[in-house]
Image (cartoon, rainbow, N blue to C red):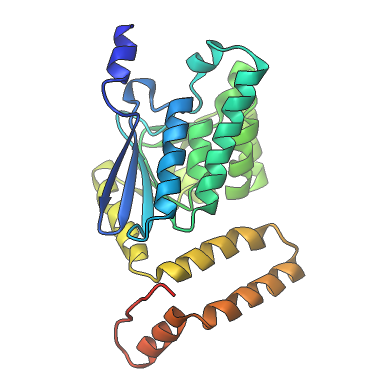
Length: 267
């Protein structure tokens, strides 16, 4: 076994830490800039499936160890298995992961530092929210190596405007954190020393909301976005009606009218 591989297998490729209703999943392949190997993608899927069933978890944070967030697919792993079957397996696994994040009935926040490129940029775009350090950089650089970032394009083009997405995809240039915020790829940009505090504060704020309402709202957000205008309003009206009939909505409205803090029951 090579020294690099031995170091990589010394600890899990994904770490999980839960605190106060917030599950933090940390990509843990720092020597590889947290490239999305099949092992890492599978680990993320397993934890997300478990979190979906865990009522104690209200919010998920996806973070990363080492100098960068995620450099995308593991190109060494892909070139070591140069065949259609392996490529199809890799892209399907990654696409399934992105769908799992979108379909997770709990908000997911990306904590971004260093680089987030290719499928790493796709991961940021897929998360519901993203907070980045001032030194973070984003790119879809596949065009530079003859491999257009087609799957990252799906999430990127749904997070930012078409012109910004096409410029990133066609040039492969690195985008600053502030430009990413202006484009809508990330929500907030903070100094690196404040990154953990900013992410934690946002996660705690959201974790204090009704988990049922968050579940209803996240699902509705992504479903209505794919509908025509009239269909979206019809669907959203039906969702709001169901939401109004929930006990948490009754409690929240009563608490507001009575000027007290609500007590969420999750139903």
